[in-house]
Image (cartoon, rainbow, N blue to C red; front, side, top):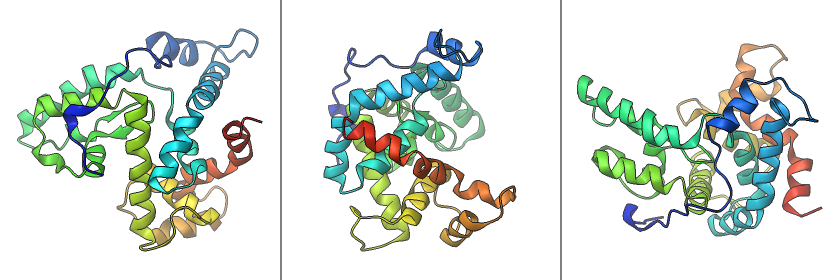
Length: 236
């Protein structure tokens, strides 16, 4: 997937991005389904976001040759939380300054997660076929803005998930995955590729309460929501 950073179309309209008011309504207020506050508001937002973008998710999942359920599951896990624009207009710049002060070449700034489906700048660059260490500050800022476009964001995440699937399962048909492969890919999205695949697979079967269970927690939660996610994707 090779595309120039300078040719994404950032849509200023479309589905509302999660902002400071949304974060306040979710984090600061108690959960009330009648008034749509607290966790009720967060889940209503996630559901609405998935309904609005389901055709786009299916389109890019097909292009990347991955299960639409996996892409939708990661989306549901990531959407909401910190205000989206703050990451690209506050956190990124602070980390760029930290890079300069420590002499680290994009070490901290490339770890900034941006987009409705949060993805690190460095990971997004690698998915696009770009060496993340070569990005200057403007290119990082431009990529962060590109990732605020949900179409661009979803597509990059789809291809990154394909890369993660192939990382553990070279040469397989990435459109048809077992539950274990779904859990592994989802957990890789959350935790990266540092941990051995055997550690993640073993954690699925570790006793509840075991510290190692967290290795696969992200992926297991995606699988637990499968029925609800598929109903939304299929418009049922």
